[in-house]
Each structure stands twice: as C-alpha cells, then as structure tokens.
Image (cartoon, rainbow, N blue to C red; front, side, top):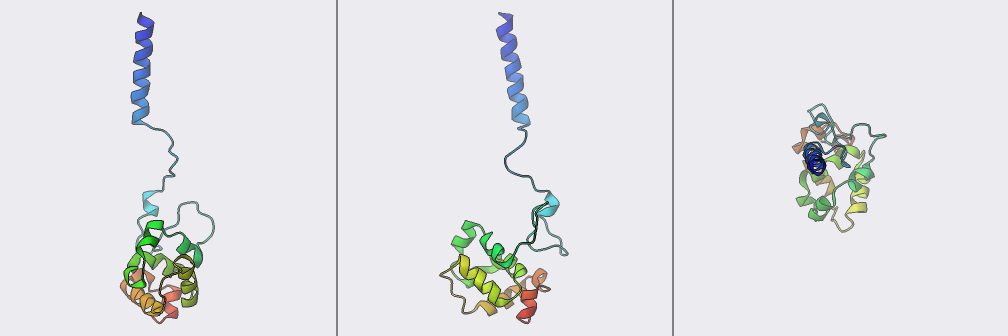
Length: 135
C-alpha cells in the first residue's frame, strides 16, 4: 500500500517541477538587447547569430502576413515599411520589392512616401535610399 502512494507522490512532485520549468522550447529565445534598438542600431534588428545581410527583396518578403494584409495603399503603410527603406539602395529596387509582395498596390507616389518616411524616422535619414531620394 505504501509503494503506490510513494509512486503517486513522486509523480506529483515531477509534474509540479516540470510545470515550473518547462525546459527547452521550440521557440528560439532572442536576447532582449537584440530587439530593442538604440539610436545607433538598425531599425529592424537581425536575430543573434544570423548569417548574411537581409536584402531589399528579403525585407519585403519578411513582412508578416498580417502587416501585408493591412497594407492596401502606401498612405496606410506608414512605419510598417521602414525596414524595407533601410534595406533598399534605390527607389527602383524598393518599388520592385514592394510590387513583388504587394502586387496590387499603387506605387505612383512611392517617391513621396519614401521621402515622408525618411523625414519622419530619423533612423532612416542616413540610409542609401533616403539619400537617393534627397532626404
């Protein structure tokens, strides 16, 4: 009679211990410092240990589906596209990247949008794209 109670007690202790420390997660942890940029850091930090540099087109394809769904025009895109401005060197490359993931978006005022974002976000001011459009 004592053995079943002892086994039950050990199982209960293990269950409590496991619930307090779930162990390794399938979600990778990212150090806090890599997700809170300082003025000297990039607008969108790359995960620690990432290899290579994100390209202009990559910056568009890495936008979340929810963000892409919400962007129906450049007027309502706002800061959602700041990381793309940071990664693209020219206005044409930026427009090509935007068209690839947002094929129905009107890019006729793309230059004005980029200039506005460059002026609104001081972290973008030194980027190649902002320099190329005169911001």
